[in-house]
Length: 179
Image 1 (cartoon, rainbow, N blue to C red):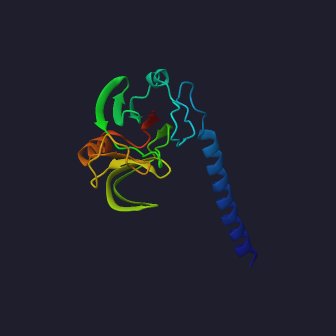
Image 2 (image 1 turned 135 degrees about the vertical axis):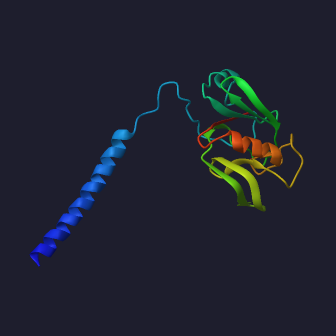
Image 3 (image 1 turned 180 degrees about the vertical axis):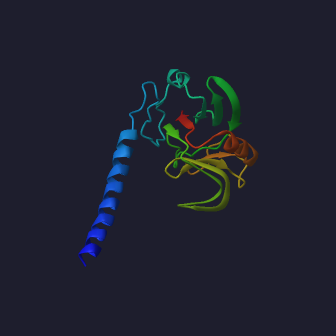
């Protein structure tokens, strides 16, 4: 009986020690952001005319690949450093359901994804890349009104252009949304 208790205690202490070791390793491997790393603004979905990101702050971004979404022009541009790679007309959020403004990162990608919300339920949305909560850049097969804000806050692209962007960008790519 005592050997059974001892062996159980040893097993429990090994599990405990393994857990502590993993926690210590995680804490030791964390490092604060490097100086010069872009800050991420809290998203603000507004319908006003304030400009939260200036052109000078955009030109200071030193990321190898990043996506710029200009809501006033309804245009998405991709950049490799300061070199323009793509420029596409988009349909961002309409006034009642605006696209959030700020600096984000692509946090997940789906070849196709069902999108649901108040007033919509769309199956098989192609080339979906989420950058903030339920907001995504994706292809739109259900309309052809690119250049006009018509979405519920997402950034719509023609399907072929969404595929190009999906293949070009990776998880973690910087997304800068401004007016």
